Amino acid sequence: MGRPFNPQYIITVLPRLLAFLPVTLFIVAGTVFFGTILGFCLASRRLKKQGIGKRFAGAYITVMRCTPSIVLLFIVYYALPLLSRFFFGINIDSMYRGVFVIVTLTLLFAANMAELMRAAYISVDPGQREAGLALGLGERKTFLLVILPQAAVAALPNFCTALLALMKEGALAYTIGMIDMMGQGTLIISRNYGAYGLEIYIALSLVYWALTILIERGFGLLERFLSRGKSSLENQKNPSEKARN
Image (cartoon, one colour):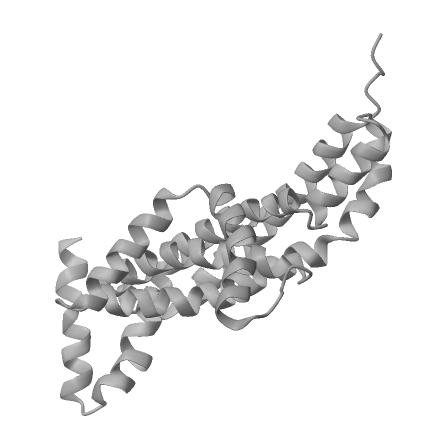
């Protein structure tokens, strides 16, 4: 007869899992930082009318979006040390494994961010750019002061979705021996010879559910804050328009 389910163990093991929450958040934060920068570079190339950069960015995005994250993780984990030794003569076999995870997730996240940014940029009325240039702001100021705020509001829902997907993809870090929350849970199960597996995975699910809710609520508040100007403009209708409504 198997061991009975022990709900109390879920509460008992939670502190041991939460001790590695900073590691999980570090992976997510590092990936978002580098992935956003790379995604912006790719998106800027994709928005060009033609050129090698546009074709390269398109091919990169297609390849990354078609590659399973766990496959890319093992490719990076085994290929990066080989390339480092071959080109630079540096042995990185003992490097912190979080670096390999961040590199992998950055490559994947950048592809999604590039398409997200491109779609957000296209969603802004071209007349906004023309108006900014007509006022003498110049290309850079027009982008920063006129286009970027509007594109950011349009991109927020999809960015939230991409961030949640990234957080779940980061759980694969344990497959190369990195100890984050998922890795700690796997270690606890192995030390108990497979016992308490269900309780530990439920505890992990609770943590990820809580993080998901917090992120969604945070993005919801941010979206409402950034959209307040747009809402006020929509409410300022002329009398004839109000009469028609």
